[in-house]
Length: 216
Image (cartoon, rainbow, N blue to C red; front, side, top):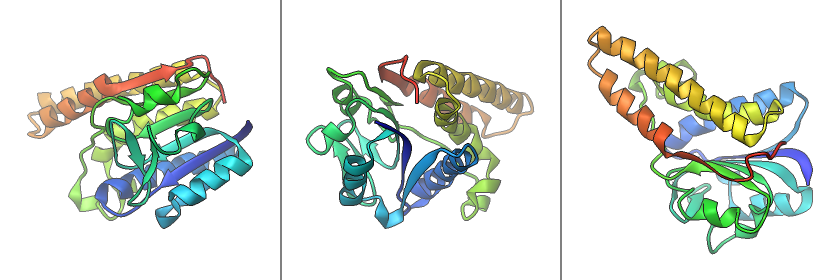
């Protein structure tokens, strides 16, 4: 298995546009650290291209962004991985799936009888956006409250931390962001409690399955 990062970035609605932008920051960090990486953006985030790359290059770290359910994760308008499709390509690797519910069944199957690790969510991964910046996610401080902690997982892994430590660092950042939101509530900002509930749901739903000692 090679020290390569594979990132999928479908882009066809507001949600995937934001995930794509934040995943691009991971790719930027990998470039800065001179870590080999492969970006599957937009329509390139399809089953054929992604699995062929995994077969040929054998990347150790997969960062999968998109819509999901209990049994699958999507790429660009199609299923990339599911309990019945391409599951073997997840086994033995470190996978971070920023997709709703994907850790419920798919994540468990991905780490069964192997030393891989799957970090994902057993509930919806949700975030609020400021519609003023929907065309420019980099300026959206509301979305950052949710998406920066999820990025922290992969950033920490490529910095050399174990998957368990990386997941812990993400949780600590979510706690700090919840504290920021509570200060907003003290100032009577009307959206504060809604933000807090959504971020708490991400915190509560984020799980690490399999090998917590895995390193990149």
